[in-house]
Image (cartoon, rainbow over all chains, first blue to last red; front, side, top):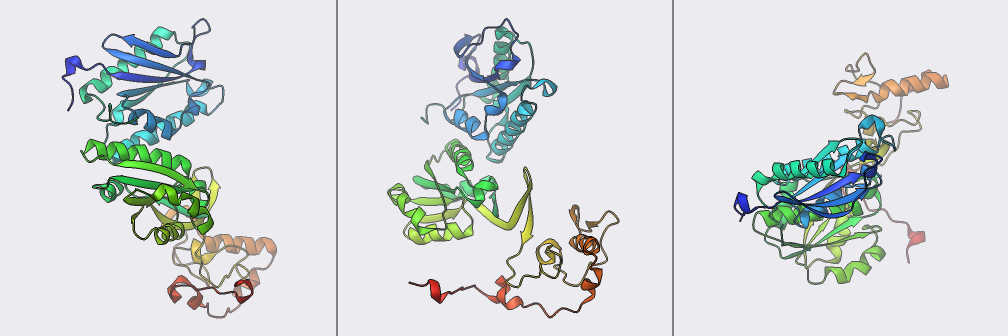
Length: 143
Length: 223
């Protein structure tokens, strides 16, 4: 059963491309508490490293939302990396919808020159997007 | 390659509802090449089904594996221990691999995870198009290497129907070339257009799937 909304602290996994960060931003990996949510930041060499099964596995572990952060399409260092990431995310969302699960638990933002704070702000936005859905029903069920 | 596509997720969930422990098995050959039943697809489908089943209150333990080839008994045998203790097996292999798997474990409930759809070519990344219908009486030698049986919507053998579009596409799908248009164009390039005017012998459909289950026997290869 979903916890009352005011007790619900969404856990958000942020998969972000290191090329999205500004030159002076310090890449960070690990947990960061936020206001009303908690973020787990995962740094990727390119957003295209993420595959559909990675997203499914993360959700299955009970994470409430996944926020991907990719480069703008025209400035991807791997040319088509961020485009592939977007297509994979769309595929994962489609599969979730077919399975009767909330596709809003996955989201993608394109950005460049981001600070770590702005990456956390994106996590906060994902937390607000999933808050109406309540906790992931798989929370605590799977490994 | 043999191509396959995932069955609708609700159908798969329906199969597994009520089971306790399921073995989801992929195949690393054809269905992996067409991104339907390889290891990636197994590891995508398994969590998706676990989540869908848990959400509706009927959680199922799903263990996974991917065989090199499900259509060869030698590759199935090492997975026999993984089938112990499961009350259902779902396969993402083609219909051939599926049946060998079901035959090996007849005591366990068996479900298909994909629909086997065609013998196709990966024409471009993410695009597979049919090239063969396994009709049992190949006509490629008469049609300049282009198959009208599998690539014509009507399997016409004596030229195009009246529905070829001005663009050279089939009347039923703009994205599908009229194979007879391609055959004629290739005949022109070869300077052998007259060959298409030859009267061909009736095609022997008795060797096709329409002729009943195929049984191919080679005595020289028998033990």
